Every structure is written in C-alpha cells, then in structure tokens.
Image (cartoon, rainbow, N blue to C red):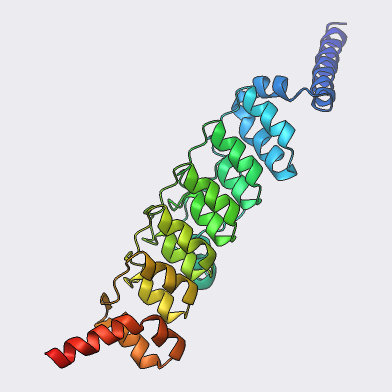
Length: 266
C-alpha cells in the first residue's frame, strides 16, 4: 500500500506538470507571449530569436514590451557574416583559438535582413555597437550582406563608422573588400576615415584602386582621401601609372597633373 500511494503521488505530479506545460503551449497560440516572457525571463534569448527568425514583428514587440532584454546574448551557433567568418573559411581552419560565439538580437535581425526589427530593437535599447566574439559590430554584418537600409539605420542610430575590432579591419575597408561600394559614401558622410588602413596596412584608397572600384574611389576623393599615402613604398598614384588604366587615370588626373607639374618645377 505505501508503495502504491507513492506511485500515485508520482503520477499526480507528472499529470500536473503536463497540464502546466500544455497550458503554456496553448497560451503561446492565444497571444500569451508576454506571460511566457515573464515566466521565462532567463530564456528570453530563445524567445526573441524565434520571433526574429520567424519574422514575427508582433511577437517581437510583445516580448520587448513584456521586458525581454534586447541585449541578451542568444544561443546562436551559426556562422555570422563578419570578416572573421570569411577569413576563417578562406584559411580552411580556425582563425584563432576557438571563442564562444556571441550574438545579440540586433545581430540576428541584421543577419535575417529585417530592417523593421532592427529599428524596433534599437528603439528598445539594443546596443548599436554590440560586439561579437571577434569584436565585430552589426554594421559589419549589414555591409557584408549589402543591406543598405540597415546600414543607414545603424549609422543614423549612432553606429561607429570607424569601429575597431580584433582583425583591425575598419568598416569602410570591409565595404570595399566585399564590393559594397554603394555604402562607402554613406559611411564617409557619417564620419568614416577616408584614409583608414585595412588589415594589411593598405590605405583604403589604395585598396579601392587595386580593385578598380571607381565608385568608392570617387567617394573617397570627394572626402579628401590622400593619394600620396603609400603601401610598401608605392603610392596610389604609382599604382595608377603602373596599371595604365585610362579610367583610373582620368579619376586621378588632377593629382597626376599636379605631381607632374611639381616635378617640372623641381
């Protein structure tokens, strides 16, 4: 008999737990996200992740209004579109010692190309310059994905256009590297350094010239990039002359003529 009573109590506990779980499950289909957010405050990372991955704006807003933390690190193991990821893939091995992935809801919204959710998260206090495990910001991810609207949103909300990271790649160098020349003028208009160096020590104007990125070259020159900056003894003008590309020579014509005039005067 005592054994039977103990078994019955165990069954009752299981039934109660199952009923409680069922109640929560039904609540999630009946607009009960705020309640779930309060009950699972410690697990709101997963709740926010689900809302962002589904593209469910209403669920995201309910969670945020219920107190979900817009800066809570998410349990997100997938690779993020950052220079660290690209370089790791290019090297076919670990870039550095393995690090614990760090992803915030804002990063996830950028990764899923959801500008409306990016704006909502920023309005609720998401850190615009949050850092991942290699100290890359959401701005890098938006540039990697050529998400012009999100790049603009991040910059308008104060994203640092000269953010430093563990690989010493400034956002403007990365934009040129991944072919996002449309966002180079936008970065420069928000204070990006036109004479920044990439991870190899090349001035970004040198990098744009090397890649024949004419749109970026025009933007950089408009914001007073210096063509006389050198890389391993070569200036941008040296590179232009060496390449013999007429279009590049036309872009740099005022500087080439000035240099030629200075040589004659000398």
